[in-house]
Length: 298
Ligand code: G1P
Image (cartoon, rainbow, N blue to C red):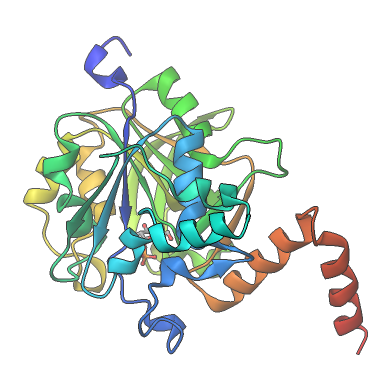
């Protein structure tokens, strides 16, 4: 790719976090789903850390009514911190919640019209540069603490090919109709050319079993495309449909993440992620293993 505008660095990430989290009620009646903890860190923190690891510093939350605690979570909590300090407690546990002033921005999605609409709500802040999108429900972690995250791998791929990139993974065919699905072209290493995209197709019509797994690097033109995007699957304005219209006008690649994915949009996925990450923790892994074995032996 020779076009330099396609190689502008990825500095901004959009996090669509306006959802109502109805699948987790009553837990999410007042607590945003993205603040539910996986062990001792809120779900959103994993996505923020993944973006930071990829060199992205400017985070844009697309929030909605009742989700203000998500923004508060990344503010300085003076009372808490001075009390902890007075008691000689370690404040470094809060480090991950700190932002360089101005680097956390929020916009509101007033009506839940779909993922495409949520992303479009961030257009003024995104401006005229390529940007990342991370869906916090999809928890993507390396095989172990030493392997890099999904967005880092995508930024590396972007540096190579430019254009638009989405993360994909293979699921059993029976599951494809819950996701965006790619029509795959040639594959080179972890990268596959995307020839087509379809949101939540019936199983029989799905072009493959490679689904979009919630990480994107997109060119700003997608905002213009979203402007005229009609409603699609589920009566919602779909990001997938807008991306599909860009294929052919700009390079489009899928990246297969070399790591693990937990679907934290589902309760079982959430429990799985909690267990998997707890088992890996140095401070509690052995104890959790013993507990799990005891429970399973019953
Ligand atoms: C969204 C996207 C879909 C993607 C999925 C990943 O769907 O529209 O293409 O595969 O996230 O989780 P949703 O889960 O919002 O229905």
